[in-house]
Amino acid sequence: DTEVTQTPKHLVMGMTNKKSLKCEQHMGHRAMYWYKQKAKKPPELMFVYSYEKLSINESVPSRFSPECPNSSLLNLHLHALQPEDSALYLCASSQVGGRGNEQFFGPGTRLTVL
Amino acid sequence: KQEVTQIPAALSVPEGENLVLNCSFTDSAIYNLQWFRQDPGKGLTSLLLIQSSQREQTSGRLNASLDKSSGRSTLYIAASQPGDSATYLCAVYRGSTLGRLYFGRGTQLTVWP
Image (cartoon, rainbow over all chains, first blue to last red):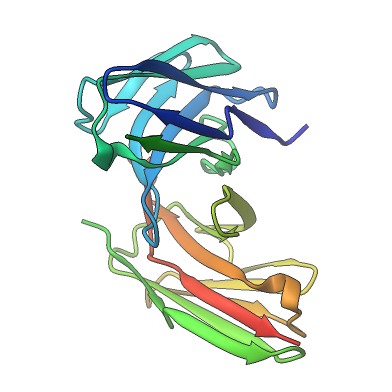
């Protein structure tokens, strides 16, 4: 199984809502990532978890709160978002070491903030 | 800081042509380079990964080469098909910080029948 799954596919939320994005992989990878991608731009790294511990936070606003409950699951909790946070949110996973950090991406969640 | 540039930004070709997409990076101290494909509104699909000790990788009609000393990689697509239409991104990994991929802005490829 070389698949990273993400739910939901699409999400529309108001600025006062609280919602969560979910990502799952069963490849035995111990590093998981959240990226944000705006239209016609490359993905921007947000967070990296290694062995279920947060290892990188790219100065992301606190309205985005990541969580890694176990080695297969990664969540991104959203609260009080702004319209400019509308984007495609991508999850990825990789081994730690091994084949040099080859990252496998999920299909993304298209988020719209009204 | 590592900067990655992809040329051309867009390419439109008839079906059957052989294509070369270019990627250049400023810091040759990379650990590996990864080529991705992205369809509109979708996630990234990993096409090929070249480790720094390798010169090329092949998968089907795709061949990627790496020249670390000159800071360049090329993705060669043989006998292009309309289904190859997508944005192609290259990304380099320096190996010093887990997860730090430096992406180019991509080449948007259109192959018409």
